[in-house]
Length: 274
Image (cartoon, rainbow, N blue to C red; front, side, top):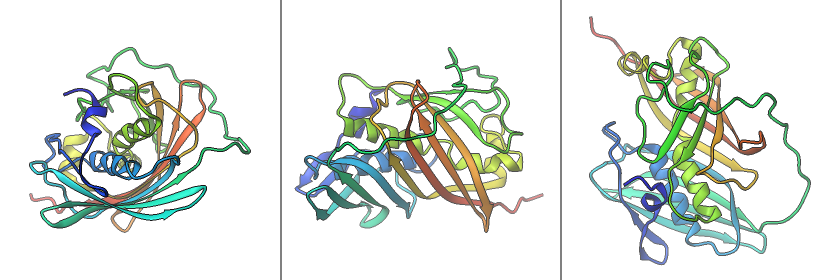
């Protein structure tokens, strides 16, 4: 199956309870973006008029790729302008993930964002020899690195990314599709100042570093289509205490900022055996 929007759809069990399938990306655990995107879909199913504008999530336990995930939604608040939802993802009777989401009735207001200058061209194809080319591609996304050699650059990296979808999608589903993709590469950027690349360095990184998402946040600023090319700019902020913090800026092809991400995760050095 290559249509990410079909994969993100959930089975409704009760008014506030949903179930989604898991996908095995050969990592031994559920990909964080999957549970994040599906939890957003579950929350959206309980909201009528408001549009999602911010998400804050915590990854609690490794997800089992052989078992469906149950999503329980708490309707925390329904106001005239804003609504709030809390979602718990459950496997084997235990929570593996929690999410808080805020929704707002669309309205006009002040509008500003710093424009992106010198928008990089979208590469025509992925070069298998590119140093930071993805080594764990998803059947649901196209990812094209902007630069051939970014590992020595402590300022992070950029890549063009888009979801593979079929048919027309709602604005809510475009946000869920992006949420799925937003977990890829963000935490990895915190290792770039330490000499780890994103592609051929992955085997060395896995051997030397334990890497796992802990919390993830997204702010949606403007409408976009997740199946159009989006420029994802990932920037390391800090590494300390076996944790890494990175930020992401998401631009459309015109260089307009459409979303911002922040992620912190575990980056614990392994004790290597001689």
